Image 1 (cartoon, one colour):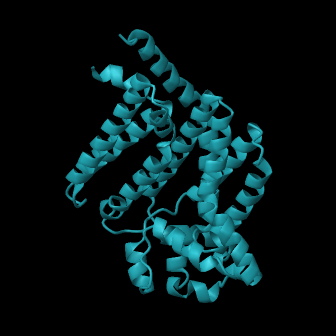
Image 2 (cartoon, one colour; image 1 turned 90 degrees about the vertical axis):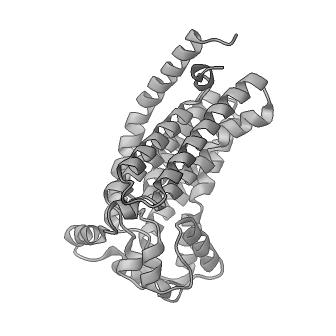
Image 3 (cartoon, one colour; image 1 turned 30 degrees about the horizontal axis):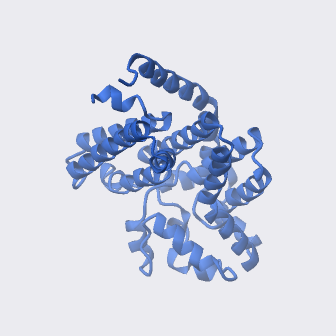
Length: 318
């Protein structure tokens, strides 16, 4: 069993994930003087790459149904794992420098106000509740679309969907590397007073806790402590970008719940500013990144798929 016989059974999304883990490893090496435990992250990255390659080979070799499902769906936890690695890299790479001041200045130049302050005039507990539910449904939409495509037995379309999602997330991660920021809930507002300023009805505190956990936001601490510990993931707005991607794909491929995706997604985009997660300029950046994603993803997917098919033809099973 050689390397080519292992990699020939990868999905296109697998190739994209492996390439990004290689990039992260290179960045860890280049900035090793700034990033604590850089060597450990490189080892973990290599382990993830080995796992993905072995999974693809084992799924094809054994024909095991469970391995097939794991191989088709490992993308979701793997992309989130990638996101968490950024937590340990971005801040030390920039020596603790955040660029919220640039984003705040851009908002004020474009709109003449801070949008998170301006939108407060419309705040009500019920609106807060609805928008927080919409915002937290972000990952549910991926599952809904993915499951329908998977059940259609149109695996090429399913793999294109997975590839496009991975590609979109990784594009947004590149933005976080270049322009790290924490968002208006820490800079323009007092994070510790959020539940008092924007109270919901019932679910809002629990859903905020869930979102905060995903973003590594310390709970029950001062605004300064929360700001120091949170993930730098503001520009572009990944929630806006990937929600727009999902809305586009759901309409294009006539997903049964496409109008639920469109309506919930529209509320989610509003919630990014209303709930103080993002500056308005982040949404503009997210929309531009979305266009880049949907325009370039099909050609990139076709190129990777063609390369994998060529390898499969040249290195058939013994």
